[in-house]
Image: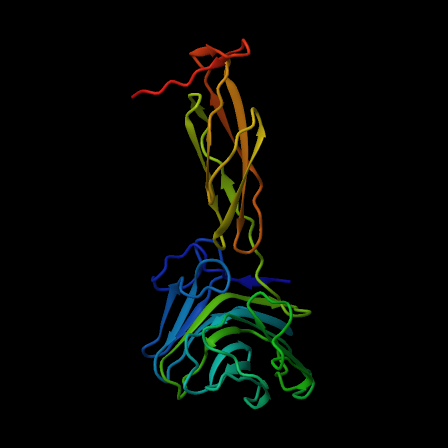
Length: 329
């Protein structure tokens, strides 16, 4: 079983998309651009991670991305879908071979069989400016009346489909030969005006046994920063740097794991504390993790802070020599 997918992560916002996602070794996509249509990497409305692909179709023009080179009797496809305005007429958004899903000018979702006949129209309307995930699983038939179509729409990463958007048929016309293409976007010219279709995480699974599901969330990594040597009583700043290949860092968590206890202050990637003072040097160790916008948490990284010995002392009322903090005026 082969899973074809393209995350678009690592691409530069605003640049033209011409093929494979070279940054993360995504599967190459072919593009079908009609007159006035463009395909541009965009960070405006990613469905997963930090960047997606804007399929900006010209008036009455096609604009789609395609996985080719497939040959299977059972193919499942997935995409994240966002639009800032509903189309002025029915346009395609997802296809397996000649079976396609469309969105209408009212926001209803429509499924057409291999002969182009509408076999399902959703009882609810989707909204502009909302992130959805479309899932379509098709099995070719031995006749034009025993193929299988399964379709559903989800809100983003939800696991329960939007009520009124699910469709299943085991008596569908899906064609009688292997399925060879997975299409994302407006595959054919029509009457609709220019339209923006934001695509993310297109995937196609051959020999499929069900929907593909949500895009996997990669675990982030974190660097706690360089080790430090500091003077007693000084203010020490710890700063971590988190990295996430398919999203953004949502939070950082700092803890002290050894050494004289100190109070950490601050939020975000940085924490500060006042270095303790003693007659001998002290070694303090701190650990940090980061969590991404998908809820995955990194492995911890540590940083060591060595506090140098105090050099001046005073005799306390209890008869104990204590480090003296000197202040220059």
